[in-house]
Structure formats: C-alpha cells, structure tokens
Length: 493
Image (cartoon, rainbow, N blue to C red; front, side, top):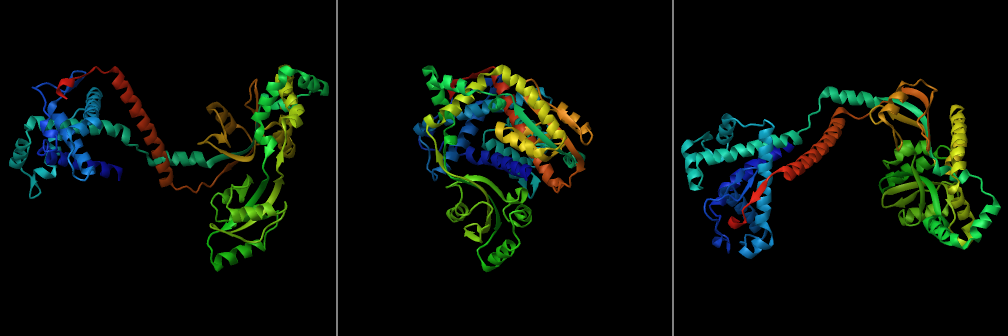
C-alpha cells in the first residue's frame, strides 16, 4: 500500500508541475518577481540548481499555500514572511545532495529507464498510447527542451532509487520462521539482582552512632534533604491492593454473567478465574491484578467499593462506565503523615549505612553466598522477604526466550544469554560483578506455544527495520550536508 501511495503521489506531483507552470506569475504581487540572467540559484559540490528548477518548485509551493487560503493569491510580503523561498532552496539542495550520493553509490539511471518513465506518463498519451507530438507540444508550452525534461525525470528516478534503499524492508519467510523458533525456544528461570548500595539497609548501625549523628548540627541539612527525597514514603495516602474481573456491557446479560462468575469466586481461586473470565485484556495476563492504588486512580464507583472492602473480601458486582466488575481487596495501607522529627533517627540510620563502604563490600559477599543457597534450595519465600528489605529485582518462574534474551526488565548480554541457554536444568549461574549480585537458576527448558502468526511478526520486524532505515537516512543526510560544498546565489532569489 505504501509503495502504491508513493507512486500515486509521484504521478500527482509530476502532473501538477505542468498545471501550475502556466500560472507561475499570476499571483497577486508575484508578477513583479523576476530572476536575473542565466545564473544558477545554487551549486552543490559543483552540481547546479537551475533557475528553471527553482521557478517550478517555487510556483508549486505558492500555489499550494494559495489553495490553503481558499484560492486567494499570495502577496510578495506574504511570500517573504512565510520563508517560502528559503524553504525551496533548502529542499532543492537536499535533492542535489541525494542525486550526487546516488550517483556515487552506482544508482545510475539508463536512458531506457527515462524513456519508459516518460512514455508511461498519462498526460503525454492519446488513446492510451504515448504521442510524440503531444510530448513536444506540452514541453514547448512550458519552456522545456526534451533534454531538460529528461534530466528532470532522470533526477526523479535517481531520488526514488536512493529512497528505496531506506524505505523497503524485505523480510524472508525463512527469517520469520527463524525468529519464531527463537521466540518458541524458551526456558523458565528464577532470577534475582541486587546492587551493592541497595544492601545498605542491612548494614548494622548502633543506637549510639545514630544519636551522635543526629546531635551534630552540620548533619541537619543532610537529614532534611533525605526527608524531602522520601516525602512520598512519609506522607502517604491510603492505598488498596486489589484484583478485579471485568465483564463489558451494561445490560442484563452482562450482569447475569458477572453474578455467575461471582458465585464461584474465593480469594484463593480469584486470580486463576480472572485470567480465564475477565474481559480486561491486561487482566488476562496477571490474574486481574491492579497492584497498589490510591484515591483518584480509578473511576469513582469502583474506588468507593474497593476502599470500603476489608482485605480478603470479594465485592458484589459493581457497575462502571466500562461494564460490571467484581473486586478482591488483598491488602490495605492506611494514610500516614510523619514529620521530619519523627523519622530523623530512621533517616540517620540510612545515611550512616550508606557511608560504611567496607561493611557493604563484606555484606555483598555474604549475601551473594546466602542468596545462592536460597536459590538452589528453592526457598523463594525467603527471597521475597529479602526483596522487600533491599528493593531487589526478583523474578520467579519467568520465561526467557532466545529472541528477546531478557528476564523481566533485566536484559542479558549476548554472552550471558549464550551461557544461560547452554545450561542444564537446575544450574545456577552467577552474572554478577564487584558491585552487583545477579544470580539465575534454570528451572526447566521448555517449548512455548507462541500464538503469533507469521504475518504479525513480519509486520513487527518490518516496522523495526523501517525505523532503523529512517534513522540511517537521517544520519547519512547529516554527513552529506556537513561535507558538501554548498554555494547559494542570493542575488537571483
């Protein structure tokens, strides 16, 4: 579709040139515009931008703006204020840069290609056949010699070939199948990543150290800054952690369906039933999990019920603009507001912990060994507790495929991915370094049934390729602009 659209646009522009050349000097104020002598408007590495090219492009742009203004012609003042002339020069210079680059890249256009292009132009045909007399008459009427027009067509074809290098992304069937195979080849892992600094809360600090730190006047600013950095923690609105099941619609049928689902629900089976029954697309992947939210995040009718439930309770059907919901509240956090004075000892402890570099280094080694043993023994509950204490990144039963090579939000290096996919079931791998614990345990190798059809994957790959092509073209044009010798002739503009 894209190529067909581009072809139609190209045809339209070429046709449009002839329609507007005859009216080039009919606009209000524009009839006084003239170009001097036989000079060129500009040169790009010695390649001229002719006055004729400039006239055609300028006329086309002025006519475009005139049509935008309801057919009213542009005055010379409007032309100047809108910067139309400079815009045309810039565009023509870019065209010459592309043409020169295409020539250097061997994208030559043969005389036969030019002739065939001209013969296929509709406005040179009579009875659907190319007519030489019509061709000559149209060119003569518009001040073109055949040589000039053929050069114009040649430049246009050269530009098309250049653009095709960047605009076409060809994906073979075999390539798509290879990608599908990579996506389908997946293993299941547990992984945990902890930075050295995030272990600071585990560093031992005595009450005497805290009292000494708080008692020093020079530490007041540091305590205040730490308080402001954690303001959301100490001034927290009431929050609810909940799941929901949504059935879309506001009719009796939707209500009966949600009631039937509600009759089967318990806190234990809510997640599994939500994955099967909810009509919220995101809820199918996470068991209807909404995470933690405060007031103002959900629609009022939903919030009123959610904040009114006690943890572990399931609501009756709730009607909102999205349909009918049932809600399970899993946990709640009461609103709290703590002053700096009430938390300064806690802040002092954190600040002191961050300064104990040697303790942190030793703790990193100790915790790495402990976490390694917990992973090997599948003591995931203990790792959950550790995650909450030190803000670790912990992923349980996570699938990793050979195409994406990532564990949740953790992206593996090619070397790490290669080692992981070669490891047997039960292996525990250490991808950490001097400042990070990063351990991965292989639970099971498996084949995922990827439901994506090949066409969808091809579209995704093409989109990525087109973005890369666009960026490549932009970078190339920057280089061409920086390296080219561009000379403009203001006296004829």
